Image (cartoon, rainbow, N blue to C red; front, side):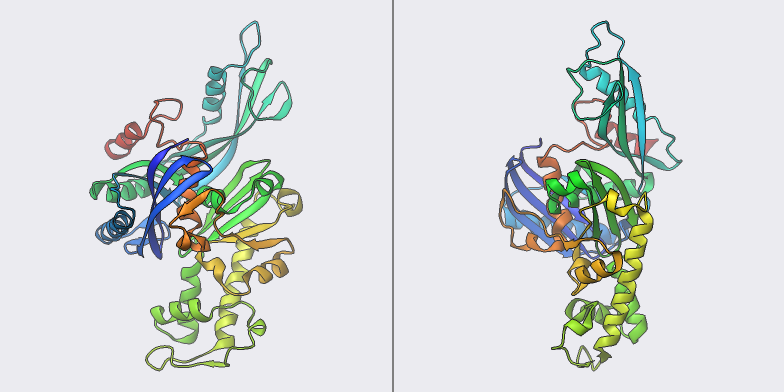
Length: 406
C-alpha cells in the first residue's frame, strides 16, 4: 500500500484533473486539493499537441498545489485510448521440491510464465494482474503460498499499451519537472471508486463514459476479467448535435450539458424550442434529445459487442454501472435498462473513508480522478512501469529508459 501524500493526474479529452491526497490507510484518505482545467492538446487519450498538453497539465498541477499547499514532484497517471488492448492468459509451473510447499518464488515463476505472450510491435506491457490460481486442479485459489501441491496455474489479465502513446504522455509530464511514479489503466481506477465488493464478486460491467473514450471493465469473482476502450463518448454526442442542429461546436457542448436528455418525455417542464442559447441560436428540444438518445443507444450496442461472451446474465448478474461525465445525461439509466434488459445504475465515487476537499469528487465525472488514489491506497497490482523493488515487473526507471532510448 502507498502511504503519505501522493498525487495523481486524470488526463482526459475535456478536462485534466490533478488530485493531491494524504493516504494514511486504505480507509483513511484525506483529499488535500483538486486542480481542474480544460483539456488541450489531447484527444481520446492521445497527446496530439505536446505544447498545448504541457500547458494544460502544468496548469492543473499548479492549481492542485495552490489548493493543497503542497508541492507535486511525482504523480500517478491514468492511461486510456484505443491503443489499449487486453487478453487473459494462463501460466503453469511444477512445484519441484519434495515437500510440495508453494513458496513466493513459485508465484514469481508462474506469473512470469503467464506474461510470456507475444506483444505486437510498438506495444509494451502495462499491467499483468493475476486473477486466480489453480493448485492441482482446484480452481479459484486466491493465496496459494503455504499450501501443498505439485502443479500451480495462474490466470492473468494482460494489458498492453502503445509505446509511442505512453512515451508522449510521459515526456510531456516530465518536461514540467514532475516524475511519473506509475501508470494505471483508467477503467481499473474508476472501478475502485464506484463499485462495491459484492458487485466485483458477483459480476459487473462498468462503463466510464468520458469525453473522448468509453472505458470498459468487467469484474468477476472479485477481480478484473476484461477491459476494453471504445472511441465513442461525449465528444461524439456534441459533434452529432453540432452537425444535426447546425450549431457551433461550443454551443452544442453547452446545450448537451444544459438540456441533454435521452428521454425528453419525462421532462415536461422543458419548452419545445430552446431559444437564446447564444447569439440567437435556437433548436428543438426534442430534436436535441433524439440525437443524444440515438448516439447512446449505439454506445450501448458497442459495449455489448466488446464483452467476451453474450451470456450477460452469467457474466454480470449485477448488470452495468455507468460513470464518467457523460453518465450525468438525464434519463440515461432508464434508457440503459430498457435497451440492455439488465440492471443499470449510475456510479459516483464512493466516499467511505475519504474526506477533506471532496465536494467536487461526488460527481461521476471524477470517478477516475479519485480512483487513481484509491488504486494506490488499496495496494492493487503495480503496472509494468512501476516496481521500485526491482521485482518481477521490472522498474519504471529501467522501462522508461528502454522506451526512450530503445
